[in-house]
Image (cartoon, one colour):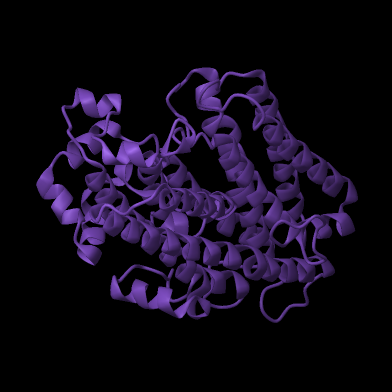
Length: 414
């Protein structure tokens, strides 16, 4: 994804939120008595971190670990002439599980995903097929990638974000919305871009590339898990992150600890209202706006017809749906809940501002319903200007309007 401006805007938005909300709401600084609303925000913030963010990133780390292991095995089996379609299908299934967890995390991109540049590193699109063809026809470069941990490090530092992450892997294992067939891996790559670049690339070279990139993807997802969870993260994942010396702390704390210790010395969050405004504005509202007006809007309006997420698997609408589910999970205080948790943003609104809560819940349901409807019929890549796209964009923009109203209400809480 082209997120250079988005990344900068997230950082700026976070800084503005911390500054402005902190200045306006000093009632719950250490030593003061917090209002009932503020006490509820403290409880829901902890629920959000521990029951939404932590498990999402833990699952993402686990599935990308599985994906890398499967690619390592597939590469070995291919060279021995023993790779089967079943192994390819399993890789595709694991990829889609990992992809779903990633998309369901995009309502909290404001944290380490942005601070450490992980988001653009693993999710830049469109994939630069010309550069990929050039890279894979270079036997010396392929040899560098085919070197275990050193190959992963080479991919991470030398390939560039247009060839890294989910979408490079997606191209290798999906074509035209279907799982890649073993026979096409056993033959020379026949994609038009490769042919035009006189790139005589074999399935073995493609698997070498995908394995190294999957290892890098795994490491970046480990980094996300550790940067949020700290010592609570999987010990194996933490050991790997320490081995490759990835950044995991902002100041002297992990990001989850910054939220959990809001209003205390050392936290980047001056008070609990600041936490909630960040979740609503830099998190939920940011991804709602991106889905409606960039991910869908660029292709729908014709501003950038090639700006299509997940074109090889044809899972764009699934990606968008999972993005909005990341908002629902954030608002409901848990993953895939049918009703809001008692310690959740939605329950806070139901208790203290019922009209606002009802409007937000209704707009959320309509956005998800519109994206479900999009999954019936032509894929986004095949018809990005379909009427159903505009219906979904309008529904998501209405959701964003309600999120902004909620943020404004939070700013009034003392």
